[in-house]
Length: 190
Figure (cartoon, helix red, strand yellow):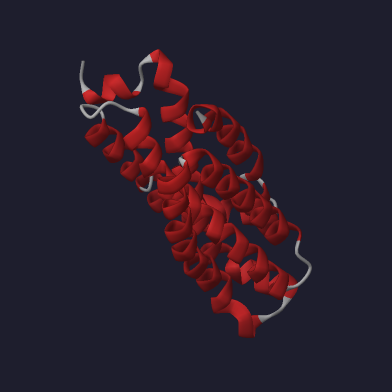
């Protein structure tokens, strides 16, 4: 059985799809927001805070990676993963319903921490849930989850913003993130 087949065997299929989906969602949000920032500033003002909407996400992302990775090593990936998904989704909600740019930035900071936690725990989950023969392929699959958001994320975010509103770029990701989080959590909590 090849590594790819091993990643998608019935007992790991949902976990594999969920892990890849969550990394894709985090990558999309990281790539999409710079595209919609002009619309956000036009709607909310706060041009002087423009760069912070992007920077807050990535700065707290680094902190989330570090703290969640350490927690996952000590206690297993379940708790750090759950916290990451909850914070990622909560940050999207805060940013998506914000009425001023400073609130968007606060939401982006929370979202970035959650995204970092998810990213870190994904690798701990792979190490625990997959046999060594499947691990390299699984890491390749998760790493490739950045490709599609990098290629079409900005264009899709621009289209959604033009067709609907910038808020839907952010809020539209909340339901799939929560569903994937619920799908992935049980095997990680064991």
